[in-house]
Image 1 (cartoon, rainbow, N blue to C red):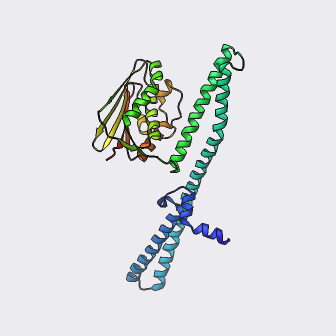
Image 2 (cartoon, one colour):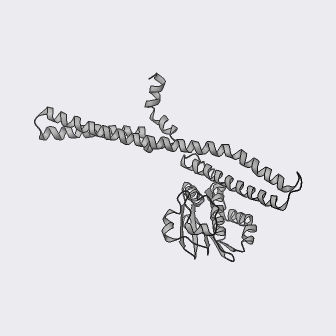
Length: 316
């Protein structure tokens, strides 16, 4: 082993950074802690043994056996943690590479489909237009999946940096309602937004909080039946701003509720109403809100609707 390789092996902080882990999750640091515990155990065993056993050789043998057993156990535990950490790092790198490689060809496919549908390259038949529309819609779904995977990868590797600013949450909600207005109208859904007056600002990343509200609003629209109703509430509660969105849609079965914030999970009953979706939206919402020092939760009843809420600390 050359000198450079040797220093890389003993550089605990460097190994932790390479694996994108905090110090207390890093296998090398855990192995060091276990070593300290083993030494402490040996010293403690020696003093206890010499107090009760007269033969010093027997005491030394007991200490040696204990040290060996603890060392073997700690080695295998550390190795297991290291393999898991390396697998997680490789998974993150794989997602980043694949996402990056898919972005350009998907954009090219979308532009090509739009160009053909526009008729600028010649007239197209109605049947051809239908197939081009299917291509465009599926390309968009793939782009959304790639985008969600990138965000999840950054969240899990702690590389998602929040650019926090003081923002008025009510302005953001109003902006998003207007952006979703055509979809809300097409779905024949009534929407009401109630906000307290003169609400304080919150310290958060506007782009990431916008993504959270987008996900919650889109879910409410997608899983609410025609002539349904969506109610949004924004108010101050203690030292936090409280956001709530309720619908009278399909709801979430009780047996599925404990999995609702897990990656790739989609409740069985929603598949009957909406086949699109990655199952990553609520996982991303939870991660962003918690990273913003807020809390998120929900309550739901099947066939009666759902209420999702989150809080964000206000600017003092």
